[in-house]
Length: 281
Image (cartoon, rainbow, N blue to C red; front, side):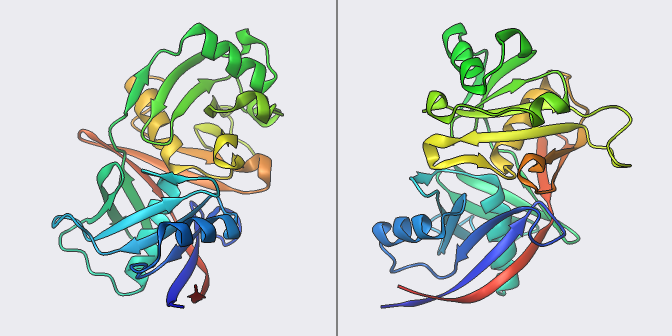
């Protein structure tokens, strides 16, 4: 058996228990793929991550990311939560930004006070969605096809496609058929009312449905918001800086901060450590 420091970090929130938690295993070298997968199934969180020494000399660490069903090449909230845990454990970046090595390559993470933000990786698939797939999405979301105002592939690794509805209320009212949705990973977005909600103003409400990964709904999703930002900002549907709300339908209060800086879109959020301990496998 081996022992490993482990941290559970709540991501995209400054208030514990209102974001999306990720379990981070430090110094995970020596653990087998089977052990990593088994631990991810056991935690039953959206993602569980494993920090390893980098294989690329430009990287500060290597990250492996597992859902309860399979390994992912990239995911957003695990990137921020794992970086937060690595820094808190004494990690020292080689340059001004932290460089994470993962399945999609090198991902930059910058610090802005207590907030972390990753540079949105290039989309692996973008553009229009074919009519047959879009019809399947409408059926899976249990909505009429005309309720979808716009749609696009926004895949940066997990396989995301996105649809836009007309209002925040429409997004929050969704009750999908998850079996009908498989194997698609579907993000849904709609604008907030201009007057805000309960004194707060966000630009968009987001929900993420990923039943094929063993996660019917993900509370707050960095990779989806990264893909959405590239689509929405690039098509003029969103300003270059905005805040998205996600998790409302699950009793969470995630806030995703999007900022364009030159050619980069940075996807940021606050992180809170909730659990520190030792994992024995």
